[in-house]
Amino acid sequence: MNDTRHVTIVMIEDDDGHARLIERNIRRAGIMNDIRHFPDGGSALEYLHSDAEGPTMNGPALVLLDLNLPDMSGTDILAEIKSNDRLRRTPVVVLTTTDDKVEVQRCYDLGCNVYITKPVNYESFADAIRQLGLFLSVIQVPEAEEGA
Amino acid sequence: MLKLSQRTANVLILSCVVAGFLLLMAIGLTGVKVMQRNLSFTDLVAHTYKVQDAVSEYRILNERLETARRGYLLSASPSFIAVFEKTAAALPPALQRVDDLTVDSPAQQARVARARALMTQQLAIARTSVRQRRATAANFIDDTVVRDTRIIREITLEMSREESGKLAVRDRERVNSIAQLIEITTAGGVLTVMIAIGSLWVIWRYTRDLTLSRDALGRLNEGLEDEVRLRTAELIRANEEIQRFAYIVSHDLRSPLVNVMGFTSELETAAKPLAALVARVEAEAPHLVTPDAKLAVTSDLPESLGFIRASTQKMDRLINAILRLSREGRRVLTPERIDLADLLAGVAASLRHRADELGATIEIEPGMPAVVSDKLALEQIFSNLVENALKYLKPDRPGQILIRSHRRGERVLVEVADNGRGVDPRDHARIFDLFRRSGVQDQPGEGIGLAHVRALAYRLGGVVTVESALDAGATFRVSLPATLSTEAVAA
Image (tube, rainbow over all chains, first blue to last red):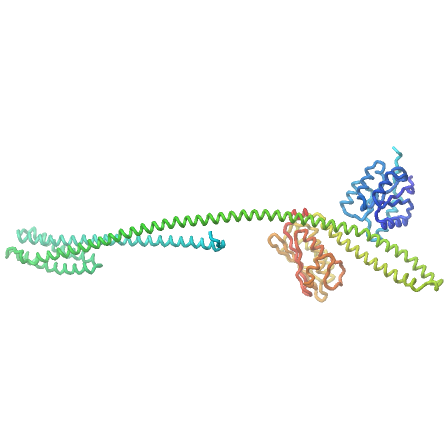
């Protein structure tokens, strides 16, 4: 049995407001896991690849990814995660304002696990995040592989 | 060539050719006339010969009578009597023949009359002299017959001479007339050749001009097509840019809006325990509650939050409208054969319930054409127009909406006409702009419908116009290509 409490939630979101609202609603759903917030792609990839507590080195993680980032496209981050042997099993939830059909398809083609469009209406937004929290509480996340 | 206008030059050339042909015709007619005159001259000459012939015959008979008489008087041989009698009988008819042939000449007629008088006298005396032959011997010295015969001989010679003179004159005239005919025929031939050359020149010139203008037109057309292709490509690029711009802007506007709406909700949530606290403090320790604090919690805060919420909701609707338009602009059109009657019946059926509630009728005129276009776009266009017609009816008269259509060459014109409140002519251009509306604002809406209709019509290669006056109903006209071109689809 996998204890999801150890799973770190890696939130890659450039908008501090969105990040705060997401965090609050996840907490309200009763999810108390660590949440690491990165406002840009560079620092997030740095953490994912080489941080001592990052998923490559240690412990399972789940990535919440926004596609509109200031320094790089979210899809590039997704592609990088899914092409990396040590990261590819990490679940990625794309949580973004873009609802373009082509973009959604592209993300799933790249290996994204869940694609959620941020509702503008706050009640729906809060609801969606809480349900995501509920989902996180039951999801099985693979353990980090032992060093090869 | 003179610097005449093409039109004047053409008229001039054409009238020259026509004049030439008329002249040729006149020459032909003159030729025929001259020939006819020539024929009549020949007839006259033949007639003169005949007259001469008759005169000669009479003269011979005249001599023979005298010869026969003399023979008998000298020899008393009865054979001379027979000849005499026969000649005497033949003389009057011979003279009569001359008389008949010369009715046209008074001079000859006078001679004939003189000859006839002498002949009567001559015959009478000759017969008497023959009868008296047995009694007396021949005496020619004072015989009047001899004198008469001589005079008649002279008369007939005169007649012959006159006829010869006439013959010479007529012959000359005939020769002249033939020469004239030759001249006229030659002139006609020369003129024919000239007209033929002129006609050929005109035809050649026309053909050359035609070829030149056709080539020029072809070049112009090619240039025009290139120009159109270029412009179309530019338009497509510009349109794509606008679509992309609208998409990015609406997306990026959404992001802060999520925050505004989110934190407004958070504020509302946070305000509730504060309000409860103020209420509790007021109940337990009223001196601690200032009027400002109470007003802020009970009135100012909820009111402000309410305005923020209403405005952000409106902003959300507007952004969504732009997003929808830009998405519609990016949708790939799929042209298919559509029976407009079916499509419009479907549109009317989907709005039947609303129409019934309002007591309005939707009528579709029979004889709708078929088009090849995008079905969804057409449905949206006509749904919007009929919906608008229902929305802006005049409450004091039963609504009547009429949809009719005509085919105009390569285009199809569909009209949605109502008897509603109408649109002020000053607003006719405005109502097709995004977020712009007209008239009394008593109906819900953001001013998106007609902007959407126009954008869709443009994409289908069409245009939409309105004809209306206040209180006089409105007619929206959608003009579409009967067949949506593949170039437009590619855009």
